[in-house]
Image (cartoon, rainbow, N blue to C red; front, side, top):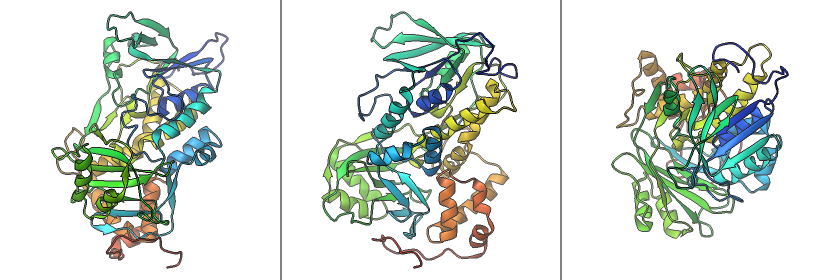
Length: 474
């Protein structure tokens, strides 16, 4: 990857040896990128501002670490492809595997979902547990080393070619000297707070154009343990999805230790509180008292933690611009989604697969721009889902909120899909496969789905929260 546009292949053997890749950030996206690069570099260094914990303690550098995370089916397949046997390890560690829609009580757009047999599954264990399992596997590779407790504060090189990163120990001394870490390739996986656009500008390169959509959504989360019989043996959790007509959302999802992580959310100006009593009271804003009743009987195991940085931001490094060879962005540093849709971990894994496939493609030289386009393509479906839903929310702002005539037609069709999928098995199967990033959006236009969406009224759904899953054939 010796040029931005077409000269040289990252990883080809030319006798020079010593190829070094630096990954900025040691979260899921960074670890998986390092895992892929270890197949092409002599050395891979992961630079992490935190110190990695022993075990499953949340890290300060993962700002949503104490909030609900789900691993969608598309992410599961990607992780298993990258780290064979990983899903068995995840199950052995106790991560709950939840069938959709059979195992959850779900509400969206004024309708309860039928608890039909599951057509997709999610893992709902803690982010810290999943990241620790990935970290253990990835860092066992002797090619990969870490530099912890250290900030990347800049790049060195010029607008044509990157030569490495500037480091500073996190000693608290702002006057501490920088030191150079030379690299043939730098991958920015530093997350949504990335400073890479400023770093690029500082060496004479162009920052990427940024697309943004921000609904002002904020949420708060707290761990609870339910008392016997509250959820019932056939119900893993609850979830109320937000929509333009129902902006408050919330739910309870199971964790690996048998507790539940509860989340409530609202929009700008009506953010959920983190006080003990206020957190419970806020759940009354949901369209049914189900969650509030459960919280009244459950035992709180943690304080409530809030989170407000939920804008969708896409940095268009794939577009033409004066940027150096040897620089890539991945994960949230490339494309940040509203976390309420649960896509981030899956996209991190899908992006690592895209990186692997782009580097391994024998037909094309993996130039910086070509690989960056592949990384953006890996996040495109998740962006279309998250940004497409958020641009319809009241109060949404940003330079990507508007849409053209084609978007209005697609919005109409998708609105019909959402009206149908809570009760129609064929539409539900297709829509869940798209939302789980395991099937392309074209699955929504398959003939059985289109017939139901275009020519049939929405199927009846339960009038009250369904307490048990439907049996096959019901």
